[in-house]
Length: 416
Image 1 (cartoon, rainbow, N blue to C red):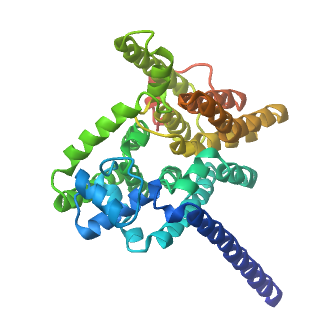
Image 2 (cartoon, helix red, strand yellow; image 1 turned 30 degrees about the horizontal axis):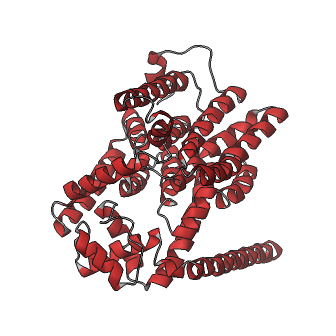
Image 3 (cartoon, rainbow, N blue to C red; image 1 turned 120 degrees about the horizontal axis):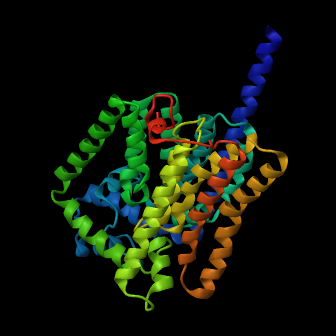
């Protein structure tokens, strides 16, 4: 017994040393990144940090003069948006970081983002009950991916999305619906990212009759919204007006179906035809998704439903950017787990596809965007992930020959 205790203590000590060493390395890297980018004063992180400072100082986040003034007072020369472009809820999220000096807050946020990405992988594969190999392979792919690089260099918010979704999935698989629904609240920080993800998750919870979870989501969301309205009455309408104007401006070159349709069709067909084409694509993908999900045997519900929703949200949303595609971690993680049931050749091809979608294709399209001057072709990345999901389900043997709506809604069926 003494030998086993000593061995356990030695292993625990080695793990602690390893964790401390990894944290030290990440801290050194993060400090270097922050210093290299001028303490993030002219980056997206400054807007997030300034939003928290604005709460402390009582400024109006949606007043152009007040928003410009806080940039001037903290020596930021970069003012991309005339007002704070996120919901006021996001400012509350960054309130703890606003208590720190900007350079220290930036390093803390970098470390937080990295921790969330690592936790996303661990939570996702724990929910999928996957082997350790996909975790080991996915971690470097994710940290080296183009979205992750943008998150680290600009201090973006996007690491929250895969963390929230993977945590929701893990907790939902364990039927801890109250905690699972609490994690969905994070998507309210940027609702356009979760355009289809939130509805898919809530519909699945409704089918499961997870009333306590749904009530938790409603209560937390309502409480945060109520608090924000007490601080700044009427902010919702003002924010939506600015967000709509910004979305309309960026829709011509944003890396989604909106920017792609403008890139391919503008000047060639009337705007009404462009809009009709978008509707046809959206309805077609949605209809195919319902049919495909109905004939798919999901061993980890609701993994395939959420994976499909992620790909469609990133493709059809009116306002997401390349760094938000870090959310593709979820469908690609599902695909990696599917590969465990494939023959060796198909498994290798599937992993090659994962590497291509997560690592190769985004950087290739970045080079092309540099030459074209617009990055609308990056909207095809979630489409590629969606295609790989369908192929992986077929190769993994998760598709049935027949299906029906009755089966989809049956207690033993796909959605329940």
